[in-house]
Image 1 (cartoon, rainbow, N blue to C red):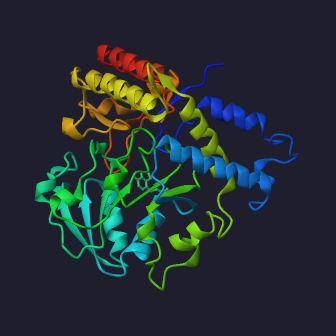
Image 2 (cartoon, rainbow, N blue to C red):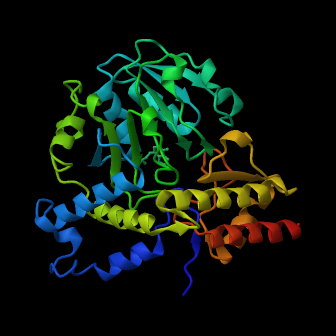
Length: 367
Ligand code: PMP
């Protein structure tokens, strides 16, 4: 049976191989007599799962040895508070606002620190990334925050900013929730990266934090212990009970990523090549049509989340119903933006994008 293609922004499609493997190990994980859900997080079985997941993630994104990989809970929204509680010491923090998520991050951080907007594209409806040369970065900023892929607005940094070249000594914090492991990361430009797992890595409930060693140990006194990066790192993510099931499924997903091949490329590089091809196909179909449009500037269009509008909005419902009937699920746009959105994360095969493009073209012809 062919499963439908699921274009959800998150929780999102998980590679079928991963679901199959989890199903086959559900009642008895590798002769242990237990489901992973039933294991103590301190037992040798789960510790082996967690250590392998961490090592595989380090390998697939080439995370340097001076960064810690933390498995936490709370999602991206909790990190909007946890990051300033750990890094800001209540001081200045600068935000580049390129969409709904960086806007939310700014507002939340304002409860804990002196959060200021260094640049914003709100006036243009979040369709561009403000030129880095125009960012108003403060010399005393404890860190600079960006959302490297805006899931709702479909705006993605194609390169991470080099803060040092902009005259800033502050570490860069990136919210990479919705494009983690879809492309490589230049860690020389990053101090901390965080993301919820539920788009590219596995089920909801797991949050990944990758943090440079020198940024640990500066938490404000009010920071909850379970969210203190130093404590979490010193306890190998087991200061409290971690999201064990999420870590297990993410670990299977990391193994799946490492197995991917595309020509001479493997792992994330293979997925990146596929992601570029998938996004190009869909943007070309949108740009080449009379019915569909995408409003994001070409140099910062997301490879993962592609919002598009029907120029005749009265046809939205018919479009969605026809898509569902063809096994193309969850294409409705975010309520704050409207229209449609196709999220084409790592788990979406090229065949799914081809099926969507074929449907869009036949729907347009019917008009
Ligand atoms: N940041 C980004 C870029 C997101 O896409 C999301 C969720 N869609 C969040 C933060 C919030 O994550 P969560 O719902 O896991 O708290």
